[in-house]
Amino acid sequence: MKNPFPGMNPYLEQPEHWHRVHNRLIVAIADDLTPQIAPKYRVSIEERVYTSVDDILLVGIADVAVAKRNITDNSTTLTAAKLSEPSKVKVPIPEQITERFLEVRATPTKEVVAVIEILSPKNKRSKEGRAAYESKRNKILASGTNLVEIDLLRQGEPMPIFGATTTDYSILVSRSHNRPDADLYTFDLKNPIPVFPVPLREKEPEPIVDLQRLLNEVYERARFDLAIDYSQPLKIVRRRSQPQASPKEEAWVRGVLQRF
Image 1 (cartoon, rainbow, N blue to C red):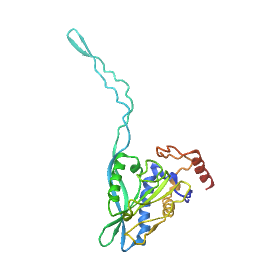
Image 2 (cartoon, one colour):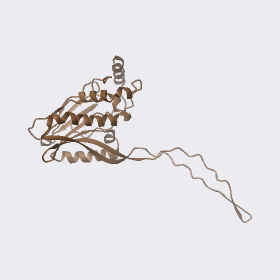
Image 3 (cartoon, helix red, strand yellow):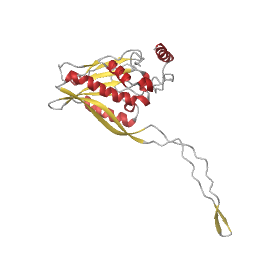
Image 4 (spheres, one colour):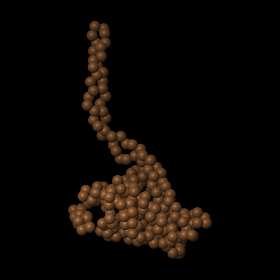
């Protein structure tokens, strides 16, 4: 079954699917870029590892059982300890997060000329995940390395981009020799994902990535149609500025699925 949506499939943003989509897209982009830039450049898949704690707060503390002393005739007896009913709580559980990204390296020198990132929910929500990514992002933007930042998630807060308007999805292409100026490709749920270039060294031809084609191919090869229950409503946590899907958007999603 083909991807039923003309652009980004919003069901792929759900937590139970996104990590698989992310990993498959990383490999697909690497495989698509390599014949365009080899042998002068090569694409490597790298990993960033950090520990993250989900935003789970303690909502109460179970009462402590107290043993009562009853003093009679110079002897001490202990009444039966009576436990009060505890409240149910959750504790934050640290987890090790591994995020994959791409580096385009010059073959002879191994110099990193471009980094390609696909944002994850942790980058946009988690304190640790956002801090880890923003630290790396700032280092890249202060260096001579080009950056391509792909945001296919409506959930969470977007990365800082001056002059950007609110949109569902975006692709940032930041050429080191043009900073602070950069190109931002924006699109919403109803539009196909635009093709975009990957900058190399200044004045060199830039390879093109057709991310819509790659996403559709990943969707078919991974058989996401068998993993997604399209009868269920979307479970997407939207940005604070737009916490829920609008009725028009929900109606459009249902219309697409009914026609497919």
